[in-house]
View 1 (tube, rainbow, N blue to C red):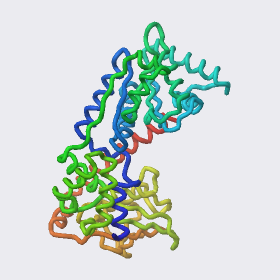
View 2 (cartoon, rainbow, N blue to C red):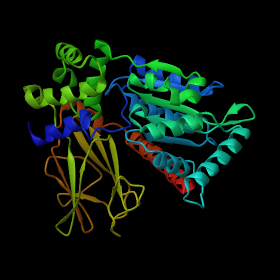
View 3 (spheres, rainbow, N blue to C red):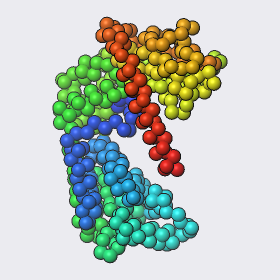
View 4 (tube, helix red, strand yellow):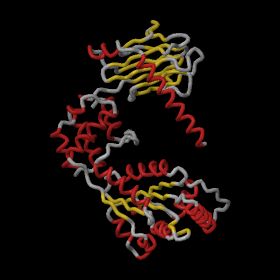
Length: 392
């Protein structure tokens, strides 16, 4: 398979897949609702179970974000329980809860944490601890979890807890050393695999999100059914099998490589950017998607609009104008190998699809849509910048 095809496959199903891309099944949605409801109950503890590759990590990560958003003042800590030790758990909780400890002794660190949990609970902001792969934690770390589960403030549990792991996690929680956790009667949810219909949606959606064309041709229903049967419907195994399928079949040839921009300054390559998103602002400001640090370049100099069948370059009323192949342009469809010049910088575009009649009509559309999009992007970036500054 061509390298560009391999890159797209990896972005859809491999290590380069965007972590924020979630194709939620019915079981995934039910699990989120279950965990949210469990954390709101007085006992405030829940257990999520499923085999490897069932989506547990994706779900608990999403729960972490939801809890942080819904309870802005509540402290939230997330851990991977694989080989977790008491020391790592304790210091990690203190760090994620932003507790300033003046001692390195375990006894005093536990006291700092205990005081914090009790005070937060009395103030109505019960902290949340989420441990993924809890069944793989060391026995001593599990004992610390059991101790934490017993803490209370005026009859109210001082820590809300979510544990995820394989099926044996239930057995661990019923052991003699975990009585405090068991006493809280944790609610339990077992994940279900994807249905055939969900598998079709899952495979095609991830391929489209990676920037590929012809997802239905690459993954026809009969192929999806075979991959579903081979994976038993579990997302992790499905990703692995999808990669193998794309590597060994001619179906991968239907995947169109992503357009890419190579940025050079005075002949030296500065960056190479795959155009996986729909829009890119080029400019001098840090808010731009492609930053060109040159006094010749305006803060918001130009915009790239990336379609499935064309890439359009639009000048954003820049001071010095935008040139393509030494020709000044206001709006143009980029061809493979075109070079955009900006001061000392050159931006060469490659793997651009050939333009068709449909795209010709879309390009003739009103520029007000482009300008409104730019306004929206500026506002969005401004909000992100303000949020980042506030968090420091």
